[in-house]
Amino acid sequence: MPIRAENIKYVYSEGTPFRTLALDGINVQINQGEFVGIIGHTGSGKSTLIQLFNGLEPATEGTVEVDGTLVGEDKKRLKTIRQKVGLVFQYPEYQLFEETVAKDVGFGPLNLGLSEEEISFRVKEALELVGFNYNKIKDASPFELSGGQKRRVAIAGVLAMKPDYLILDEPTAGLDPAGRNEIFRQIKKLHELSDVSVILVSHSMEDIAKLVDRVIVLCKGKVHMEGTPKEIYSEADELERIGLGIPQTASIVRELRKRGFNIKQDVLTIEEAKEEILKEVRRRNV
Image (cartoon, rainbow, N blue to C red; front, side, top):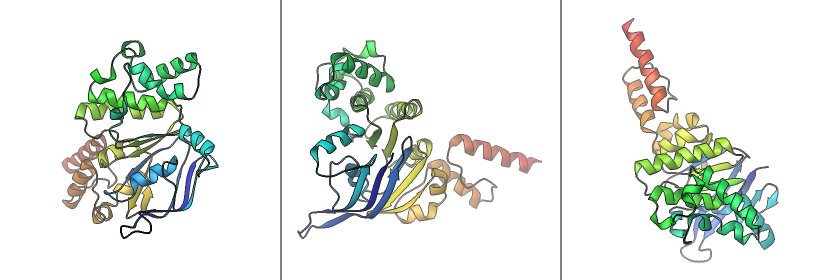
């Protein structure tokens, strides 16, 4: 079953001079097992949309369903939906507060009233899903970890709730390159090894190109484009028109094509570019 948003409108500060239409006629669907990227410039509606998915914000108009359950005012339903849809905000490590990593990751399951045995199982499973050795990390203080490690502990805390959908809002913001690479490596591994659907909100065109199966492009509160990474990034002129870029590799390939290189237009990764350039060099040397 999917997350389905139909005819969504969301208005900030309704009835005031500051009224802003943040989302306008949104229709999107996130299917079970998908890895979906959401991109758009600042103010395009990305963060508002993902908060509708787990009921943190109610739609002004339209409906949101999670696995057939309507997201609304019913508190019992909202509790169930928020267990199904885990949301990791930017800088989630600021929410770490327990004295050990294990206690922090187990805080959510503890509040579900689960048995001690089930909590321990979930904590161990979640920490291993984000790449930690459980026995080495469980008794460590979360405040003594590196930035990337803290971020992974925070993600594990959401995974311990066993969500069907994991939403990550700029999960590598503020991290150094090593921390970024490790976070994304673990997210990709998590998606491959589990049934969790992943929704990634990011400003990084490179990360989106490498990781996701489908891209939703928001612009001025509307779905402007939707498709595979290759389909979306082949529309470089249109992306630039609405204030977005394309991955650096795709940009280099685009420039080479302008200079007469016979290279496929939909190249996104360094490996693909290398292969195409070598083919072209061989053709020219024949």
